[in-house]
Image (cartoon, rainbow, N blue to C red; front, top):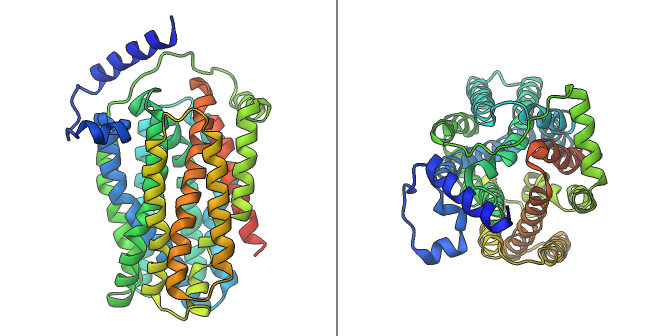
Amino acid sequence: MGRNEKLIKEDLEIVAVTAGLAPVQLPKKVISIFPSFAHRNFQLYFAGQAISLIGFWLHQVGIGYYVFQITHSPFWVGTTIAVFGLPFLLFTTIAGVLADRVDKKKLLISTQILDAVLAVLLGLAVINGVASLNVVLILTFLSGVAGAFNLPTRLAFIIEMVGGRDLASAVPINNGLFNAARFVGPALAGFLIATIGVGYTFLFNGLSYVPAIAAIYAIKPIKFRYRKDQAHPLVSLKLGIVYSFKHPQISHFILIAALTAVFTWPYATLMPVIAEKVFKVGPQGLGSLLSAAGAGSLIGAVFTSAMSKFKTKGYLVLFGIIVSSVNLILFSLNDNFLIAHVLLFVAGFGLLTQVATVNTLIQIASPQHMRARIMGVYLTMFIGIEVVSKLNM
């Protein structure tokens, strides 16, 4: 069977599984830029995640601000974020093995329920004045464990929502949604911290999981026909790692992800310190800076999705690397608060373009039966190495 015949068969199966029409019928011009939005599944997923990820950024801004307020130490700010990322270094590849063997939808719902409970517990602890640094670190680590099992499963689940034809559109939108939530989340976090207190950023994050869980529950995934791995989990783990580093395309892009994790991605970690020490602004100024980067990521998602049919995607990766690197270097030399917003906006655009395209290219090159394992290796190299770099700050 040829590729076109396979795609036609896949399209028919998608229509059958997702009950045809999407909840919102978008104009053809919009679908031509965002083909993944033609799918019922992806519209549901997008709506749920749009709310949940605003909550995530409420939490991230709140945690950095709270730790800095109780310790007055940039070291503990970086360490707390690193503690959240440490499980990604330890568990994402193992999580990929599990996700390749179980129902991904059920695994996603389970991990999100756990994360919601942890966020609510942290919020209540802060509001009631019992959230010591140790309490914050323990709950943050457990949240990282939930995320380590959620993220590779989520990335491997994308193709089960939209199929192979529109994967190159769905991946950048998924990445862009995560980063674009910074356009709203940090600004809202600054407002909440200044008005009712930092504890409510964690509490609202926990509540924001409710629509995301409901959306995933309503999704009807495409069941691809492939032979599931029956090998011992350790053998499956080894096969996924070996395949990732022996495949010429996947290995090169994993290397790019690792370098990005060390030299580019961690810039947001010390933003609470930069906001206070360099620009001398409060929580609302911090939210404003992170929102600028999030707005750039939003434009980057639109751009990358519109370029989903662009064949030589390697040029998009190079373009994103140059744009993000140059603007972050200029940001490090700048002490003007307004100019900082422009530089972070452009840096966010370039970084999203690069990361989303790398993610897409790895997914396209991954065989269905080990996609979650390869995503686990990719995330270990991307997020895990970022954690190591934070520990050395």
